[in-house]
Length: 224
Image (cartoon, rainbow, N blue to C red; front, side, top):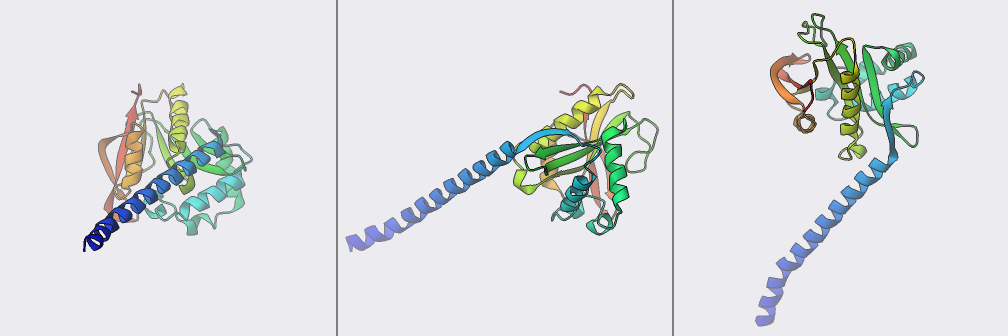
């Protein structure tokens, strides 16, 4: 009887030890993946004029992500039909224009781990959602980091590059950097707040679902 009782008591302990070992192994694997991803990113930089094919491929990958319907206004079906000339013109503009700049996290194999686009919005002109802007500001859009590179600091580096560019502008002198995030995208909202973006109280309806809202988050000048 004593031996049976001891064996029965030992079963939960063995299970707990196995669960703990599995959890430690999973944590170690996640940390290793994040470290590998971080090492693979060579640098965050502005897109180059000749990278339209890379820009197209990256955008299409982003639009195939499971959260794309609540992260982007554009659909994969629309984007994939756009001609090469569209991607050439957009990439060239994103590389050279004084009013828009795309930043990418380049990988050793030539691909991209992530990307953001920064748009200049002048006071009194139409903003990204149609209403007139009440600030000279930069609006961050098209934010995407590949799943295998999330949690490795890539998003922060991209935002650091975009906001540094915004604050460096002499005309206009930017008063704040803003973005919008779907209320259903809690993970993205938490990530942006971790980067210093705070809700302004402004919301707009989601184009393809008026029952949902987009929250405006912003960082004012001077940044904290």
